[in-house]
Length: 112
Length: 113
Image (cartoon, rainbow over all chains, first blue to last red; front, side, top):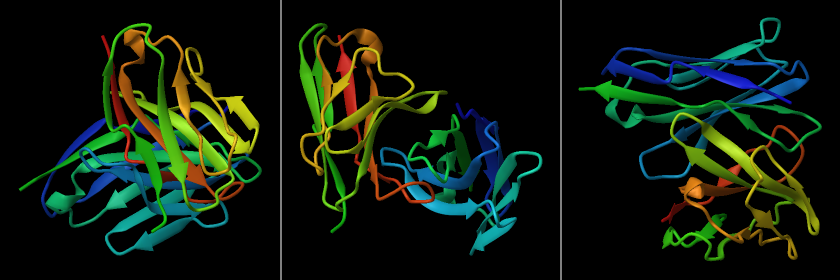
């Protein structure tokens, strides 16, 4: 089955700096890669996703890049703010499957 | 409002006492699943269901049961809970195969003593 690895497990950044989280996946048939954000005490919620026919996608201060050859994808957060502090999960999914395989999560702390 | 609702939010129980965590969605989603979240291990899938009366094991199914008698409901049953099932549990639903957003419930914090 799919194995998703996520690094780093924790990340502390100064407010205004950028944060980058990296994930690798094992199943070459995976073609959908969402990112979920989980604030403290809350449920995970989708913040951005990318499909395999696209190399990069941006939404305001967040962006995701995908390298299908190397089987890795990354989340980039620019101009970090205190409300970006949360746990972030990457995931991978095949188009003919319902199952989402999640990474172990990255705890991001934005220092004021 | 589109949502996934879990109950209870918090539960403390004793070893061996059967319990059920309910999950309901109002989005007519076909796919529902249960995850447990433990520090450093991310979200691990327990069971999933592709439609009414269709369920299957996820990655960590031992000690759990599920049922899907109606499309909207997907309860998680612990027949004989043990302390290693102390965890944060999430129910999630999505509308179709691949490339669709998963909507999560609020979570259930379970402690087994």
